[in-house]
Image 1 (cartoon, rainbow, N blue to C red):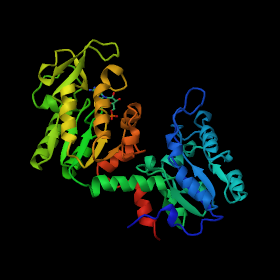
Image 2 (image 1 turned 60 degrees about the horizontal axis):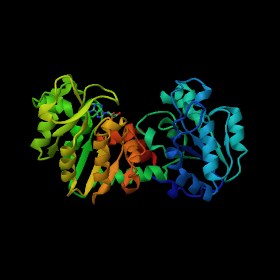
Image 3 (image 1 turned 60 degrees about the vertical axis):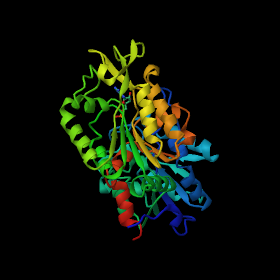
Image 4 (image 1 turned 30 degrees about the vertical axis):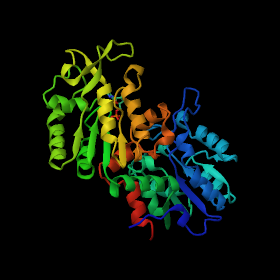
Length: 399
Ligand code: AMP
């Protein structure tokens, strides 16, 4: 079943449009927003609703208040920033449910925007509680989900709330995420290459398994490579290894080989005598990692190998850094891969965890076809899962 999108809703004018957004932005100690990509990402949907004279009620979570009202998790900074970005007042409601909020909503004029307080101030949110969802719907007319990054959560404002509306739809951010994911994983132009990195194999086993069925090549870097390399008999020193997952990693490797998927692992690495930015470092081959040292980045020969493997790619999907890119000494491999991906002639999709941070830090984000706003949600799509927040929109999109 197909999803209805915000531009397929009839007669938005004057309607109370409840929009779930993800304004879970990073804040400094003085409650200043340090990065507002998540707010900017929803502007197309908000502006569309404004152009169509809807009354816009925004709902989001911020941080982990664990079902209690805690002022440091107030949506106030997000409302203020949105107000600046839209160039119009965004009123912050005193709560996300209750008579006062409903009165405020009922007094809205077309084109007004209200930001509800943090939905996670109530335990019912994470419990997907139907009563909380009904209260949260605040008698609004239409529901739009444009919070891709929380669509893997069956929470009240994402899932249960859809039962309270005759019309549910997805916003433009969600549309972009779905379209690019479809181009990458459902209907890719081949060769399709997946790059996987990050700290651990655990949490990415299902991704690996699903990728083996879909991709032409898998490139593995980051800490997770060393569980594979140890399984292959290399002595990897004190590098990150999950001994309990060696067998699973080897099974994934065998599955890839059996399916004819080309499987690339590092051939050299940057090793350090300690996990520290000031550690002593050197480049060694995988065969020569010194006892007691740890590999914290891929080496230059690996960069050449991986870049070569990307040469004929028509589609590239990337999750997870190639090394501990947060420390300068171990950032080169990740940044070199950002450059290789950015300069490839492929459709390039990056997402999950810190990969978007690495791409931004490398200054190459403009050359990537699409940077997903979803961390966990993007990973779950890569695992081949149906996200609860998307499934309800499919089920109820055209009722
Ligand atoms: P993940 O959340 O699994 O994608 O992991 C991201 C983290 O993996 C980053 O913070 C990196 O610092 C870390 N990482 C990448 N490569 C290594 C490595 N070789 N050893 C230890 N940590 C790593």
